[in-house]
Image (cartoon, rainbow, N blue to C red; front, side, top):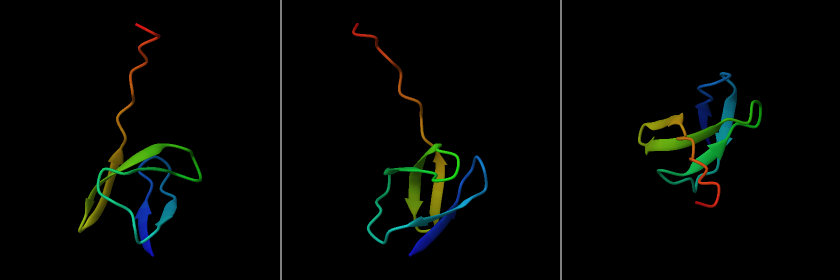
Length: 56
């Protein structure tokens, strides 16, 4: 089991062994989306916000 700290609220997040680079995870404490940017060492970044196209 791997652990990473949330960049928004500093909560510890437990990750399954099968996580992959560029995967989006959600902090169970604050709900922020985090993107796994590297597996070795394990690092995360705030996930980019998707733009709404409103049907255009």
